Amino acid sequence: MQIHTLGPKTTDSYNAYQYACQHLEGVRKYDVSLHPSFQDIYAKLDQYHGDLFLVPVAYRNSDGTNWTDNNLIFGQQLSIVNCFHLPLRTMVLVQNKNCQNGRSIIHPSTIGILNNCLPTIDTQKIKFVTSKPLALSTFLEQHFQFGIFSYGDFEPHDTDQYQILTRLNPHMIWCLYQIK
Picture 1 (cartoon, rainbow, N blue to C red):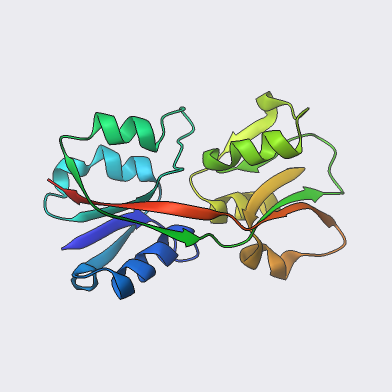
Picture 2: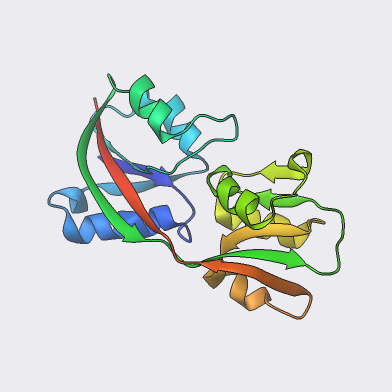
């Protein structure tokens, strides 16, 4: 039996899995299965009968679908077992001062942060990836001016080349499903 959620281990999803193991009865007996995206899990629900699925309610995919949509669409395959809230890891919106191309790399769920902090951002220059750790690695390896990721992952790379434009400490509600 497995509990499916977003990987890698540096994601808030993995932190939520660890919390669930410690605080929710019966979850500890499930082994974690980390996936490259939540869409990967939704697409394979019929292969995971009897397993658990842990997803944040702020989940949003790059095609515009979100937790609300998926909760309704997949409602016949998923049964809510529990919901809980946790603080997320500190997030930062960072600017690469050596880059002036207006390109941004983010997880789709953070689009509201980007639009709020940089209201004139060119939406055609936003690239979406499946996790904040992937946003960070892509930001560092490719030529992006802006990125949103967890500060703990970014901290070793924090030099004068980068400016933190905003720092956020949000909380998240997590939904734990039984896959029917």
